Length: 379
Ligand SMILES: [Zn+2]
Image 1: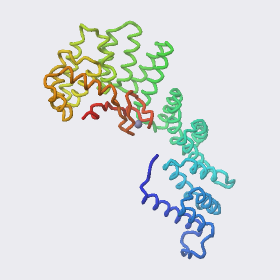
Image 2 (image 1 turned 180 degrees about the vertical axis):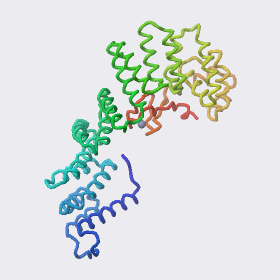
Image 3 (image 1 turned 90 degrees about the horizontal axis):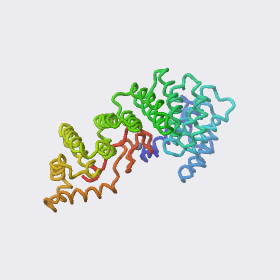
Image 4 (image 1 turned 135 degrees about the vertical axis):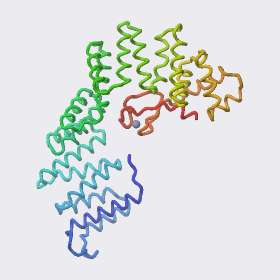
């Protein structure tokens, strides 16, 4: 829920009251004295002051009904309630508008869009979908409705419909980032892999790569297919490609990569990862070290020097390190135990944190917003 600062809220309420008054008495006339105000208005204000917002809202809706000039105030108030998470009130306002037989067509369409947004916010996805579909036929509101429909389908995990809505947006030149279409295609490819249709999965991944390159997620899924088709070398190549494109995935995929290459090639692969992390800077090396601790390969020769360096230079870990000098393996194990219970990822958009990696944040529905955060947490 978006909380508005109290002062903003008071100012908005005041501006709405002014709006109601303006609508009620007409702009350009002299301001009425309080003695001439409609008695319902004063009753409504009383309810507002005594913190009975529902009764205040009823009273204002009754007042606003009396005057067609207050349409904009309805929309402003409805949107305000929705933003505050008070969706039931927003719904009442928009339904109240739609119940007016004399409502002009453009206002009716606008009210339908607003009501659909209320339903979306309330999680009533079926109702939202129906209304957005209806409104998407209105050229003026098409882009807003299609974009909202895309969001409804994302939440329903109906990736084909989400992709269709995206492509309709492309046709009106209002599409969001192409990487979002690539994610829809990867979701569809995942479903194809699950049902064993690897040919269709490969086609979908080719389409995903046409939308976004480089695109680590497509490489990861393609690696999965290669593994299923007994092509381990191709799987390793694709996995390494994915890790180069998106080092965030190290924590998740390093154990998988090491299992694929086998014990004989393990040190060689780790050595290459160390060399790449050296070139990427201290943050990159920390990420590799923590992934290695998670993958329980701290004893590997290429990692010993980097681990010692990261431990002895890190402001928090330095203390642990100095408390047990030379106890390299034990300290690494202790950190590993901490990591096992720590939140590993955090959404950079909304702060949602957890131990699993998501391409699509389950809380705020942002794409590609998950970052490895255990490093930050231990700092
Ligand atoms: Zn989020």
